[in-house]
Image (cartoon, rainbow, N blue to C red; front, side, top):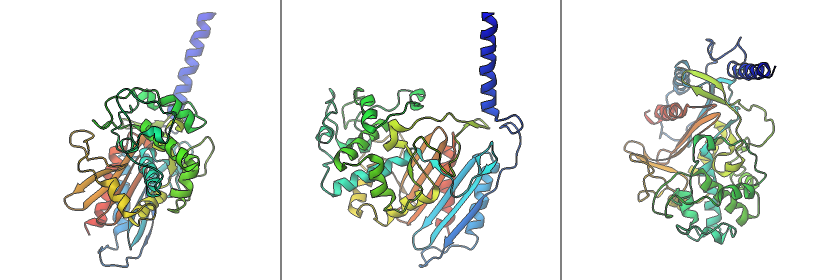
Length: 392
């Protein structure tokens, strides 16, 4: 009898797993289905002759997106271009919810993962501009209960640059957190006693936990919660009306989370982002992320001097051999053709995205996918869409 119960339990688990993956068998990832093509909207009215935009920009951009979908590069994707003194282009394609056969729209809300980091970094620079933060002071100046580390003292600048020695996830499993932290202080308690990987300032190690610490710093200095500060001083100022922390509630137009496994898209477990809200816990739309890029170009959030500080990365420690230097919250690339580009990608369960701001060309490109495992495709599409404008 006991063996029979164990067998039935195992059979039930396998059945649930199969239902989870194929959701349901009449509409599953192994079945060929018609992918909803790109639906776009453009608001382009160029005031200057800087860009000789062709009338078929929207047509060519939609065609490029559809080619990516037909090549199985995405399940659902939302994209956008902002061109200073010209306007915006937005387009979405594929599925927002495959089970219910809901197509992706330009209102699709997705996780933006580590594209959150430059937003947090800009918030830090706002406090710096007000004289409330010394970027090179010990972190204990602002977070008194942060322990002094054996390998050295950590500064805000080092946290921004990922040179503090604070570790990243120990494994891919650690990156998939399901625990909810009621506050950033509670999240800090879970990470503040981790040992440093190296002497602060001596090496580069990308660390989402380092940005959690920056979120706590924002709270301690401003007197506001991280979410409240970001809403008042970043998202509202940039007119990002559909951007927020991903909390435990239902949101209209919120995409389901997917994983790309080979050629197959399956549902992703819904991880909890509360331990890394300032590093990758924000949800947004392509339209809103474009507005963030526009606000950077127009110095709406920080001064041009502060932005110059953020992107002065020529002397930084290289993340990896061949990678672009990392400044204060931005990856910085000097393109021989287009000039300086500041950018950030992001990936986590249920999303892969890429944001690029072409500073010299005054163009912003964004791609948000609702599937983990599509980061390179998001980068390629972002570059391709920008090329349609910049090569005209």
